[in-house]
Length: 215
Ligand code: BG6
Ligand code: MG
Figure 1 (spheres, rainbow, N blue to C red):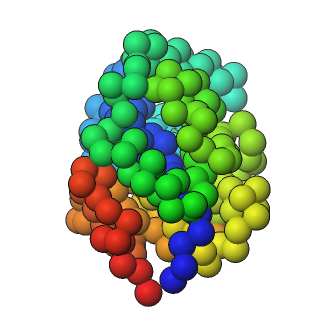
Figure 2: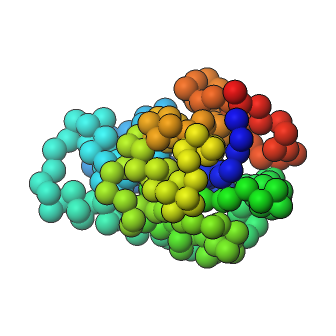
């Protein structure tokens, strides 16, 4: 395939914020009186804040009123914001910045496709906002991953056919979103979990564009 654009998820791909989302949800689960494990958390990765809360409540077998849901989602976000407030460019995952620069030098477009409403704040903190030609975040879309909207919107804004786009994702829902958008997807993480990806890499350290072989 001819790669004309690379679309990157943020949480768990560019930065290790997936850990902070987990810890913040775990705090809410504990407050509601149940345990929430890292294994459970796989279901929340890539999923919007309110959809994540619904999954969490299903795991804990708890029902809340709409108002309580808004309150708990807000509380989770405040906790998450506390975790990310001291982030700096040192928190970019190993090899990511170099890989982004390499891709850019080959005149391949760069897009960010994140379900997070905090995506722009994090990009500012880690100082890589200007590297992206387009940023699609949770404020811009109405349908969260695995719906293709985030990546389809990214490709459209980059004026690039989905068949020429590849997505980098750490979440099962994100891989499904890429495929639903007609794009190839590189899983970032463990191949045991990211079975649906077209290729799985452990991370970006020493990764070359030539290493990515897709049909
Ligand atoms: C995704 C994360 O990137 O953003 C999810 O993988 C998170 O865990 C989602 O729920 C929404 O994030 P936020 O920052 O808008 O609550
Ligand atoms: Mg992610």
